[in-house]
Length: 329
Image (tube, rainbow, N blue to C red; front, side):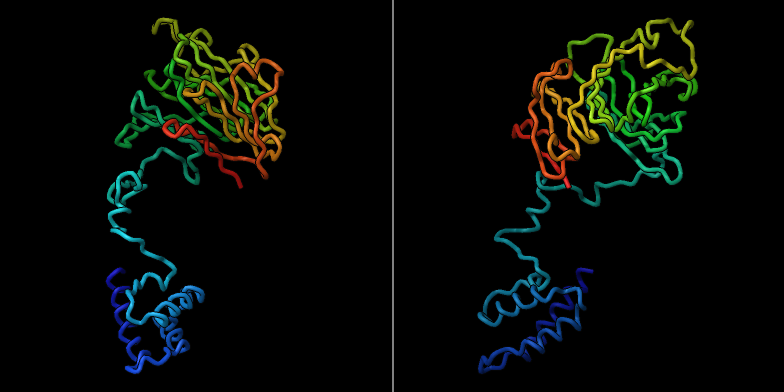
């Protein structure tokens, strides 16, 4: 493709000689525009053609960058080297790979990806209930299919209990991915939940033993602090006594603290360890983004919140720059 474009640009440069007489008369714009349209079609914008034509008309002997005719301008220095700079690089084709056996059903989509750096693997959750663990080489280590009719909306990793947690519209699922036997028999389904769950993340405090706190957002504008312990799942039982079956647990037996912080769906929650705060965002234009201590979920004190027109549907924290970036419609 690049060779063809180069050939076309050389061709149009040759034709420009016809438009530039020896006496340096004015170049015929109509002929120039017609030639450009003939070579490149209507995709070239009129404004870009006019800008490029004005440049060569004002200075026929000046340096010409042919990419300018498409509205692209090369800055000083080696542009290609800058594009390939490691810090500026997003993807190179040679480093990209396609996962053909991702463990998803037909007409299914990946809904959530959670990276577990301490174990060097990733957890993915598909909308129709397929949980999959990939290693750092993107090879499937294990997978399971959640026996729930509701769509999966999020997933994360329980660092203390060494389990995978996922949320559906009405349930919380805890998957013991290391157990022997059928993976489907090693799931705990916690239900019912009062509101539709939309997102989930694990709270990493580092000082907890045999328990994990989970943050969840729902369609009622609530942020839930849900606590699970090893006793809740009988994880202290010996392997001989341990039952290997799909177990349904009553959500009312779990500690669940929730507070309504938004007037619309909570589309993302995240615990930021560096700030020792949680963040939650919503499409609510008034209470769009909340950033505060976990203690605010247990009381009615005012929270630090920000208003963004049409709400916030994504955010992240950069520790190096100490900034929070939000994204909305």
